[in-house]
Amino acid sequence: MLVKQLLLGAILITSINTFAFADPLFTNGSLRGEYLITLIEIRQEPAGIDYCDITARAKFDGSGNVTINDTRKCSLTGTVSSSGGLFYDVKPSGEFIIFEAVPGDATHGRIAHSGRTILLDGTTRTNPDVLVQNGVGALKR
Image (cartoon, rainbow, N blue to C red):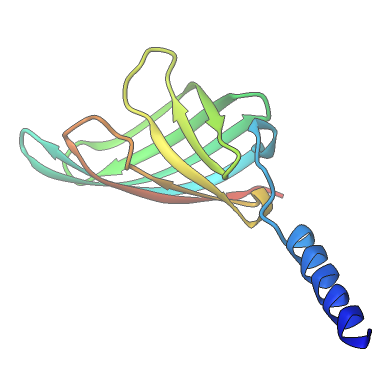
C-alpha cells in the first residue's frame, strides 16, 4: 500500500512539474512594445564585402504589425537611416518571421526570456548578397 501511495505521489509531482514548467505557447500578442535592437550584417556588394552595424527600434503592436526605425553603419555603403512598417507572425514555439507585404526577404527570430528578449538571424533571407545577419533585441522598459 505504501509503495502504491509513493508511486501515485511521484506521478502527481511529475505531472505538476511538467505542467508548471512547460514552455509557454506564443502568439503575435507575445511581441508587444518597443525593442532596442543591435544587428550585424555582412553583405556582398559590387565593390566588395560590406560590414554593417545596425541599431534599431522596433515597435510591435501585439497584432502582427511592427514599425522599425534603424540606422545602418556600413564599411562600404556608409551610414543610412530608414523607417517603415512591416508585419510579423509568431509560431507557438516562439519562432517568428518579420516580413514585408510583398513576398521577399524575411528575418527569422525567436522569443526568449518570456518576451523580454528577441534573437534575430538571417536563416530565412533569400537575398544571396546577405552573407551573415545576426542580432539581439531587448524590450525597452
